[in-house]
Image 1 (tube, helix red, strand yellow):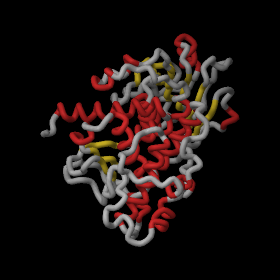
Image 2 (cartoon, rainbow, N blue to C red):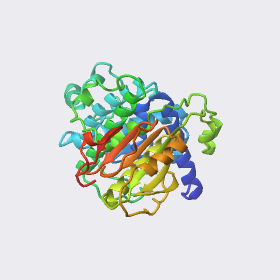
Image 3 (tube, rainbow, N blue to C red):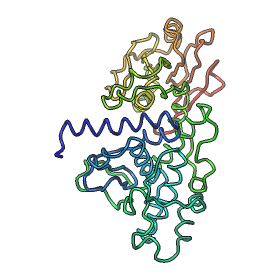
Image 4 (cartoon, rainbow, N blue to C red):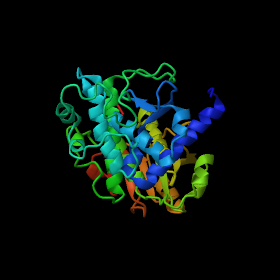
Length: 381
């Protein structure tokens, strides 16, 4: 089937449906899937990953049952998130791929998703790290195609398929760092939603990885995604039509986002914060965000939506936090996020809504904020 707008839209619906279904099963796995760049390629049999992107054959994948497709995507995303490709080093490719598949098959099954009938399983080996499984397999195993794993012993790709859309240049270290942060966000959201330990928290494969520091982005996600939505009752007819929001339960979280435009917060920090808020909005449809710019006045409101252009900042005078909190008192949001260096006039009383102060380097010390939590941007953010 030739590519085109129709096939592109069909592929997007296929992937969106899987992401939605995973939200109803596991916040941990769903968050990982939301960080994955999933693109079509007809050069892979079903799916594969080069450690950065996940490539899916749109025609062949569309023939799978929905839960089997979910398991396929999760399989490849876990390969990427666990850095299976760069960790191979000089080891024999087929044997390494089989070792990695044994581990990932166990994880997918643990998530309650089906794996292909011929996919390899070993309940002892799949609890080990991929390096340990590789050693345990012995010489020659995996080289002749025996014990193939889902979706095949060649799904760890040495590079992107030639028919894949172009991508920006990114080093292996960059991809590993980004996936490390995705794992940190997944754990954070899972813990915040009260689901207990993340489903892979005690898995030796994860313990072997250097844990990513929970950066400000992960903490922002945790703050904003604090109200879970029950996706269990959505009408599956909506999935094929892309009309997901209309099937959601009427449970939302309203966030007021304020940005200090007095001149003490640089443009890069403003863009980074708003872009990250838009990422949360794309991942969690129940979160609704309204933006205000502020100096001694509050400018807005602007509705924030995923992918929309960031509204041009307004302001440039002094700093007074009170106008924004007056807006908050009238709007009664569920949470307030305020990007500022903290040097300004605070309201006499704390608002009803939990408040998160996002502070760039050089901002007011934590003790100077009379209420709320303080989140600090790193240098260069």
